[in-house]
Image (cartoon, rainbow, N blue to C red; front, side, top):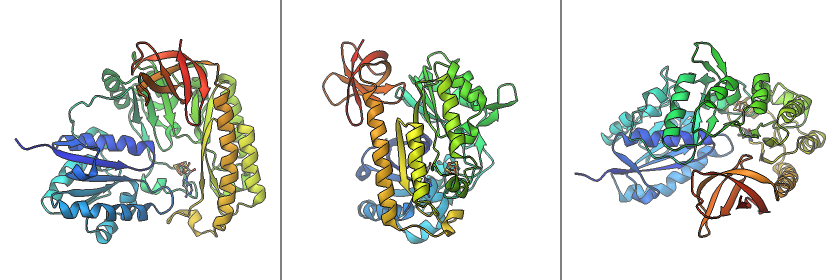
Length: 440
Ligand code: 5AD
Ligand code: SF4
């Protein structure tokens, strides 16, 4: 018997890529591949790429440069490019990088086994189609992998919002929602394998409108209500959302579903109405704050997260100050902020950019404010009792780490503590990126 081939996947970017990488590993599992954590051991290396911000393609080409010696030392090694750079660059990758054996977009990776076989036969397949079939239904069924206690579950892909800065509508395509029946089946399967928390994923997840069990169109709220009925599934989260799709029923679900966690990632990008308009966000700063008010009315302890872009074309000091003001009013538990980077093919790419030094100053200022809010929010947890779903051993002996309802990383030590347990704890200390706790 020959030894199984080894697969190394390097994942860049968002949680959806993490989910896709797991599915790709399963797909190639059916072709006899087992995962490895070391690129040097691998018979196949896949780079699952992200195209959202600057120099994405260049980073991929330099990574390929680093991988070249491995390929020189092992002629059997196959290298594939997957994800959004694959989608955006396609065959151009083959022209620029002779070390690459296959290029597969985010919508066609169910075809990986056939592509891998073609690559082994000396071809260099490229597949960046947007096929009609549902890739999740066509993934070869590999062995049922043991899962952790928390898993991602893709329910929706693509985006129709066309924010002026964003490549997603081009790389991931139009919004498509998976039928509820398939999502529920996947969730039940995950629970059978020990999963207790699912994070529903979509580029615009709250825009979900899939075929329901009754044949009607279901919203995300309807889907979440049905998922909450699954015994053994304790926690539900979803990401990433758009303010304009925070519907009444979804807001209500935050009030009356205990399993829906009190944490929400709701990007706003800017606090200036002028910039929001230029970004094609189709909502104002006041409308965003009003949504937060309504959410907090039903769930006062909601932990808020967001995304911001500084230095979007046309952003003057007053517009940037409006963003700072919105952050002060909204109050974030955590937030991500980025310097604007012009992405080829997006409407904003044609507009004049601000000097990089200005972007640096603004990013620094915004991040300082966000860090201050984050610290205060964490500090406010000290002394409070919360639930923690423990996931894995920590760095200290006997220590276990997990997540609070609010998605804080929490570590604790104690008798009988084990992964998969949902325990009440009291927070004792706040460190930079985690909280310490004692079991109750
Ligand atoms: N420049 C900077 N940040 C961007 N994002 C998306 N596109 C760009 C861009 N061109 C940020 C947004 C989005 C997050 C995932 O990445 O804030 O919410
Ligand atoms: Fe991109 Fe999100 Fe805007 Fe869609 S809603 S275009 S994914 S930033």
